[in-house]
Image (cartoon, rainbow, N blue to C red; front, side, top):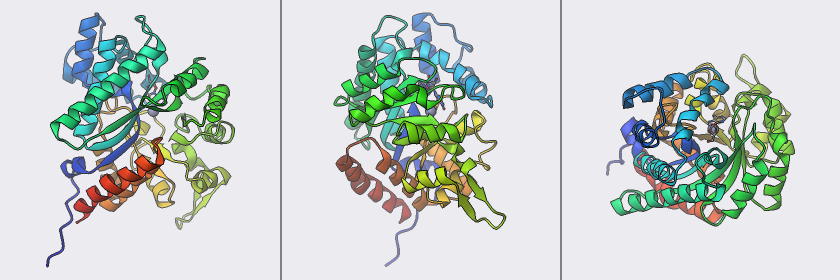
Length: 366
Ligand SMILES: O=c1[nH]cnc2c1ncn2[C@@H]1O[C@H](CO)[C@@H](O)[C@H]1O
Ligand SMILES: [Zn+2]
């Protein structure tokens, strides 16, 4: 009897591996062609007129080294997501694109408050996105491909003052596909504690949330998100590395906060390419992903913004494989980390781990 062979770890093979995505912005993942068509339909002027030019414009402009400048590019995607058709189409295509990349479970987020420019209200904005998700999930199912489940997180913009309202919106839709709440936007000057009442409301409702923290600002932001706000997960959280000292012989010493994050198994939604673009880290080689993974933090791999980073889950994983030499078992561990950290009920998380993720990687590992 010969042993079943291990599948060579290439990007096409990686696309067949079951993947779990916890940090992906709906308004950061549009197809360039869709941005062009929707802009045409609503008379919106874009900075480029063809698909390849527009794709390059988003990637190059996002490559700014600053979160604030990176975020400026979202004006153009948000502008074309102001109508029922625009929202449904973008949500449906998001599901199709993630499924085609082998994602089996995703939590996709966006900020409803940014989609009220053409007369929609908060509830109907959320309904249209959920309708697009359902339509995408059904199309994947009907095609006979590996099914995908996509859930929604509602984001409040941290510079604005609508977080309590968005938290209430999240709870109102909790039985209809919305599984959590988040805050995003420029981090410096807008600490998580500014939105404390929204987080207290969520906790009182036994509802889940994550906070973008430790991306463009350091440890104080992470500390507030955990100690004052009680976040379930950290969006990025990459600056936790500032609380870890590595000696010349490689021995790592963790500070109080880093220890707490690790002890409590607080999931880190790491987004390697995005972190390089916003300047949160200098290069992928210097990304603390590997240090954190080796220290057994609960690391997860995420896309953040597929359009701005010209990326997919398979590409993000492949970049990590090329940079840090990971194998299938490492990728399986990161995927199980993500599934364990999802805001889906426990029995459904377990079912996906046992019936989809483990069997999927078993075939590849051989
Ligand atoms: O990496 C990020 N850090 C902080 N905010 C972000 C990031 N990516 C996107 N957004 C912000 O979240 C809003 C809702 O999806 C986007 O419009 C963008 O402003
Ligand atoms: Zn993000």
